[in-house]
Amino acid sequence: MANLVRQQTLDVEVAYRGFCFQESDDSAVPVPFNDGYEWGVFLNPHVRRFDLFSAGHTHTAAVTVKVWDAEPPLDDCSAWDEQGEVDFETTTGEVALWTLTLGRAKDVITLAEAGGRWRVRVSCSGRAEVERITRTEGVAHGVERYLVEFWPQET
Image 1 (cartoon, rainbow, N blue to C red):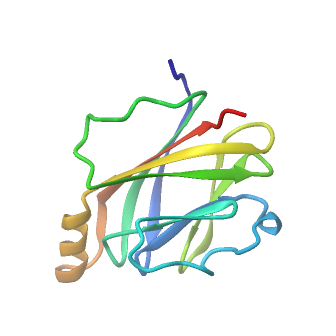
Image 2: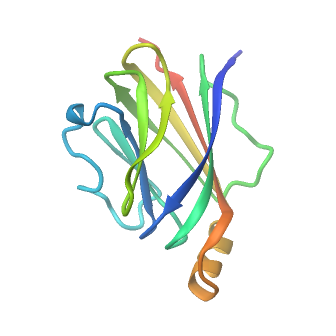
């Protein structure tokens, strides 16, 4: 059974529908954000980073990050619009959040005391509503919700 190691709640300032999670040591990322960013791809893995494509153009997304000690059960409490999984490698054990307009955010997610290989599951809800609001009314706050779960890969 998986145990929750830590949890963080983040408000992510999304612009141009994109943001990413990237190895905290920028020099260890061969293709930093936003190079290689693909429009319309919900979850796109790169070396030491993964990009997310939001349904809303400019808004604040509510992001919950959970770090587990093993693969967690699927969260079926919510009706998710999108879900995906990718592999992620870190050299430092820390992950930084990046947005297209603001660059690196001050928030850092600690996965472990050292680098390693991780599996990541991303779940998202509120996509149709945030798309509608950002298209017709302007900026939305907390309408699109993400659950980002990290757990160590078996070696």
